[in-house]
Length: 410
Image 1 (cartoon, rainbow, N blue to C red):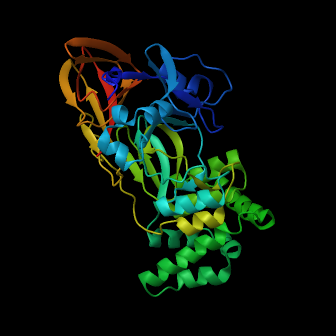
Image 2: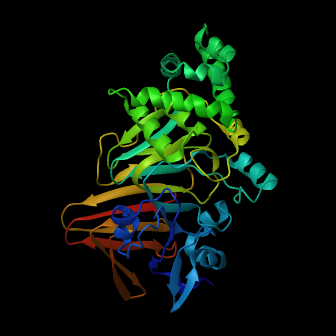
Image 3: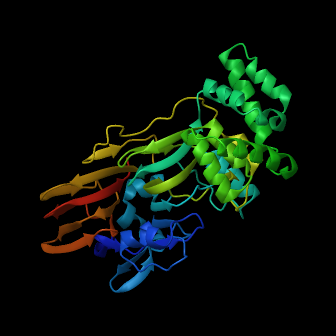
């Protein structure tokens, strides 16, 4: 028999991750977002909202604090509903985050499900999850990111601009790229070129002088393009790191608030600077290869990369704000953004699936009813709550401006 105490919303008490690339001091976005004191010189990188075992949110059930993953494990039908529990092995399938980057995250990609299982089996210390990690990043403020390989001819132009790369990558492979007679031949050779560069990441004797010559040449110019400016800036932060070449190979994106990018398995990417809401499959599987002090696995990265050479798609290019459904190919989540500029009052239905809501601005009043008993709770900026599958209908309202995100399961 189902436990009826789960027929109500539950406020989530979420954990902050202090990775070194997070924002600090007066610029620390996350503590201001959630309304907590700022510890100076402590980086605030990510706020995790969900049931991942590394940093699960807590909920209070009948006066007792419990980690959400444990509650889901013990009461899957109440929290997830029958369909979601069956499809996702009694686990909440998504993880929501608020991410705040002061400098570049690692150059990375995520494995698909089969690759994730293999990586986890072979090296569980560095790959603690056996799940894939499709993810969407929605800009709360202007976001700089790199994602996906540039169009092939853009990379060819970079090879002409940076002859220093020729000796480092190998003059023969560069010659083959420049002499390619067809698009398929060019793409094949670019894959070999990128692999040759990344496999020399640990050869500091060769890498350092190449990057220093590029930085020195760029520093003496006054008309740098955006990718060149970022190359120089990240050099100041990371030194001669092979990840700097990503600015020559990947699409540089400047997202405006409300715009988003989706990165599926195999897509190389990194967030450079900005504050975002990020939603992903419930996984922490990352394959890194540059701009990080963490474990790097160049061969794994090269093996799972998707080599699609094209401009990258930006979701919500028009910057719509209210009722924006950020559609992706992910089966684990669908996130909708709302911006209510005046009073609103509406009923919402979950379809007997869980729904997670994050208030990103203003305050949101949630009301519900169970067997004639009514409840109401107010959630302010930075607060979040979970609607269990048992509560199929609820009401949300505000009296003034409010911004919130709702995560459901397609």
